[in-house]
Length: 248
Image (tube, rainbow, N blue to C red):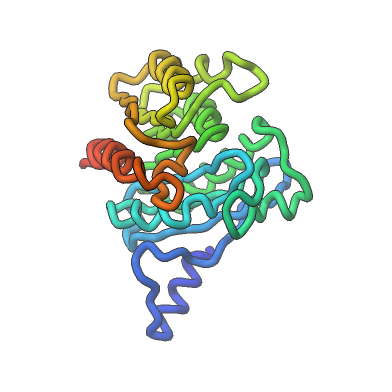
């Protein structure tokens, strides 16, 4: 794998990258042949839980550039994925969209998430797999988890709602999810209500809805540059969930 090869070459030259620093981006292929670009952040422990990070609308894997190293510091590996519905909200822009030549509908990104999950199963067979969504991908992670109840160990959803064409799809999927679930949202009454509705539909016994005093839409609420008043409070909440669910 390119990501692993990059680390091996660097080590051979005496240039071992810091823990949590990104490797070179690599490609996976969706079932319909679309090339999907991803970025790995490695803890050095291949058996550590692996978090698949999916971005919000108009965005890219760059959404997680300041966040993934912090997840690695908590003891996780992470892979941030450029879904085919995205753009240039953060830089560098979405490579999958650039290669495809257009940004697709939200639902069309699900095969990219399936491909990332397949990659994780093949390349990290001993690691629990977490799926983490932001905005529209926070809706899709419930569909993904409902389809793969044995492969996914936990679901994290920042600002989920019924963003898809089928306005009941997320609730139906949530009712099938029995692994631990964490839901966050902006400090906005409508977002909080949408998150609560999905939270109530989740079948899992271990589930958390964090209602922030300060926060913005999607995973960007964890970025200090975007949410200086709420980032640390939101980090505290997700950190508690991650530590609890990753205990042996």
